[in-house]
Length: 470
Image 1 (cartoon, rainbow, N blue to C red):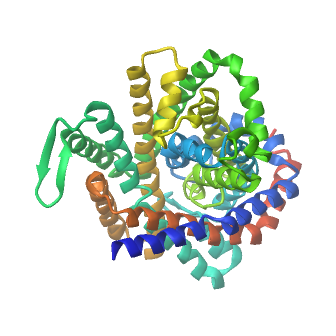
Image 2 (image 1 turned 90 degrees about the vertical axis):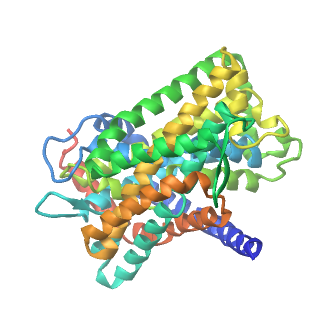
């Protein structure tokens, strides 16, 4: 029976994360890019400046930078390490090129999401801010569309609790720790009714659960405070490691760039026919780019709505830097490391093994040290994803329940429990279902983006014509 269920869910998953969703998000990004006059390129320096310069006034619960880091905590995850390797393995080096194209247009989408989140958010007397796709659908498109807003919120709760925020991330952390410290399963313990596991898995799940609980109990402000420290730290460390690898293989860069560009339009020329069509390279790259930076999925604007700001355009610009950092910087670094070292051509390895191979061969340090550094990056990336998705799913539940705080607190403890049991969950159907819900979030969100694109353009023109950016 489980095989039948898994097969059905896999077919649905492939249908959701296929051409229609990619076209919807890409066309939305292209449309916004044209209507905004390439704002994501023209205003990127200003956006990067405002990214670290918080407003002194404005409603909201956390700083603008804190809101960005909360959003980045959810988007910068194992996909930046494992997902890029998977995309290149399936679509060839050219997939990295299409990943960048998706991110370029995705920046315009993320800008619109951040702008609309602040414009249509609700801030109560305690300065508690709630916003995101559910509110810009209801308040921007009208109450007759409230069913669409509730649909988005329902998908958001399911994604957080049923896999993307819990099971898959925790499993990734415990597997990384176990593979490094006890790969041969020399230290095991039998858990009645569950199975036999390495002590490293048990200890990792306990430590992780305690750390997650201590942070989540403090709410958005504590999540933002932790994210402001951990996210920049982990991103900088990972980028520095990748830069060292690239510098050590700098002579190979011209050939790597040629391979990536040629592989984007004629993949069979660089893969020896393994990847035969241009469409496959584009599909794998675009899908992985969207999945990694979440532009169009509607998750990031939930965090953007909590920012202390009075200018929707300003927060929109800050929000779009998240896509720039996640994909154009971090995913590019991973992809270059894989192409430079030829890791994508090694047979018999997949997923994180590809990136591990690239690090071990490309860095001038012992293989054990490079494997340890990659493990640390995986742990930090996955840990912050757990925090970010708890915040997203709590806000979705708050909207669905009409602000019932007791229900939200009960959900928080359920989320922590899911983190605790995550390492012992091996039901593939749960993860596939969460993947489906993640993709389904995009449909109501993109409908709103198209419907409210005129509002985005008007707000943007008014802001810059009045010189508010000076």
